[in-house]
Length: 125
Image (spheres, one colour):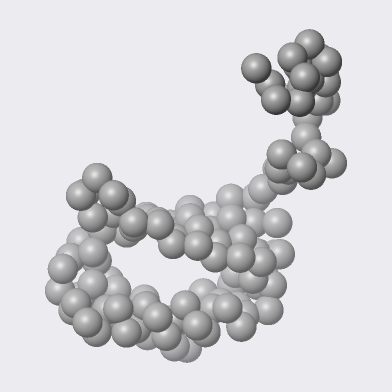
């Protein structure tokens, strides 16, 4: 599994056009083979930064999406008009586990939590 982390600082130009294109691209991305999930976050402190986090099954799926013709057109508009700055990171996910799905959790975490629950009970206090 791979994570694509796209940080952006909108320029403020484009307003409604930016929102329209972003919505279209988001809808197209949902249909891409290999996409696991995508979420976008906005900076609540007033700095204006946005972060889009998507998870993909493979680098090939990311490459296919990156080179999709309409996505490339949107990238061009982003560089020329919509963004003051952006940074893109692609990372291979080493582990993926959750509170209730511990299959990939490290052994030391499992040992810690096993002792914690024995000592304090399921509530953790």
